[in-house]
Length: 363
Ligand code: ASP
Ligand code: MG
Image: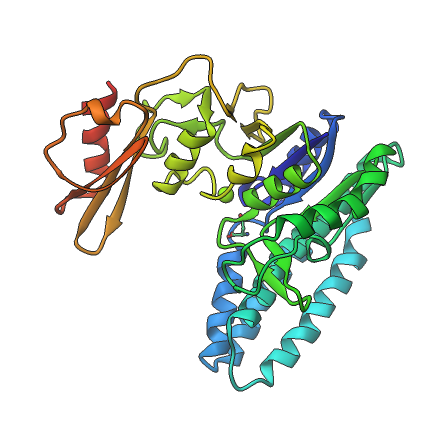
């Protein structure tokens, strides 16, 4: 059984969502599909929370109307069958927002509640479209992540509780999976012991996918996104960055923690003990090889990649790979681990310096 996750750019509009539906249809072993909020929605929902906490209800209202409008249009384009259900969901959010508008003060659990609207809307649209596409060939159910992704109450960056997640996942999914049913759920969100909505941290939907995969002992996880794999450096900046065909869990974790945007840094931890492989692939080119991440690789590399991050007083460059200790680097080292070293670089343009370092160590 495979668990797949589609990121925000992969579900950004009706056309993009249809490409995801095609990927699902061509992967019969798929059992659980995790959906992110549509592109940029979580940022917009963050702004609504900010407007509310600044007491600017009017701004919050018009920001919400924008999101509503976009999802409404998307529903229309996906098909008549989406309109009434998405309207009912948005009505329930309108009701919740009205309640929030009466409050005097806000805190992190209100933020998580508002942010959760994004994944709730996108996953509903996705499930309805899949159901329509499968025409009863396969049953397609929507399961709220709050019903199984149990976490602590650290709102905004909640820690999952793997044992509870396993228990709930077994109860909710196992029988249906055995009967060939397909389940759609939300990434990023969960719930605490009081059943309040929590979130796993921004960009955390990848983590939801691996938590579910581990709970159900899946055979693979597929992370579908807008790039066809993990690259040795940000491919938007380094045009000749190389696609990495395979990475170990440790390499991918070090790379993600150093700021490689393609994966959320905690993503791989749940997969390690059961050795569940994860593939990063491009939704619009599903046949491309992608990047496989697993416990060991057939062709180990000394250096796998470099990242650059801005800091108030300069830049942090991180090199990742087993060979990082063989390199002689003049800059002052500010952090190190088994397979990474981070250096401080005073000033300079982030992209230019990344290009220079890439040239120096990877060409
Ligand atoms: N929608 C959430 C975010 O933008 C989670 C995710 O997409 O990974 O942070
Ligand atoms: Mg992501």
